[in-house]
Image (cartoon, rainbow, N blue to C red; front, side):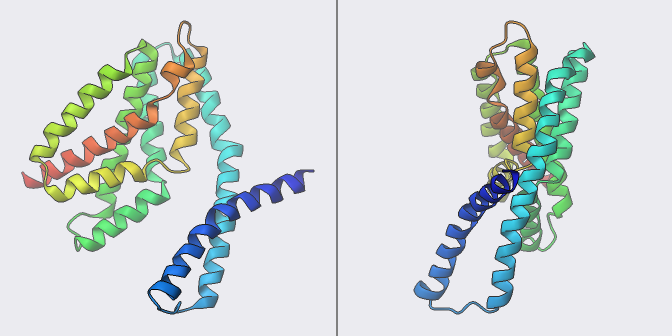
Length: 233
């Protein structure tokens, strides 16, 4: 039975990867009329992508996700809101450092800017913003603060920062926020937030456990815009 379940999960991963590969091959060969340079390497790469993604997601669901839920449900024993927020920041920060999509984006930015924006500088900047957004999200849950009030303030801050940040950093900031919402951060952070919301009295997990992903993305945008402003000084 377990073998069948694993094969079903592998097939689900394959179904996610193959359509994208087929579309790209169609455009390359049929529309653009350009051959695939190394067919064997391409096929091997697709297989690595399917199996790699499958095992990665399986590992996250078997380890990091349940651990995040356990930490979220138990972290309240710290009995100190600021310690809990600091722990949330650390989890968000270190989780962002290993996001593959963010690393890919940062390397592209470094290449396009010819090293003017080092990839590790961008990654750590995004991680700080993501961790801060995580901390704000946990603060919202602990204090039952209105999501609308927090988001309104943060969006106004983004609008102000865009007036002073270099234009290229505005684009990088929005893409960086999207790159953080990958297979590492989302399961852990959602599990942590909902796990915390479930153990708090008078807190609705549906109302306060969700929304943390949006706050972490907003935090990433703010940190990258701030980085852009600092580069001008």
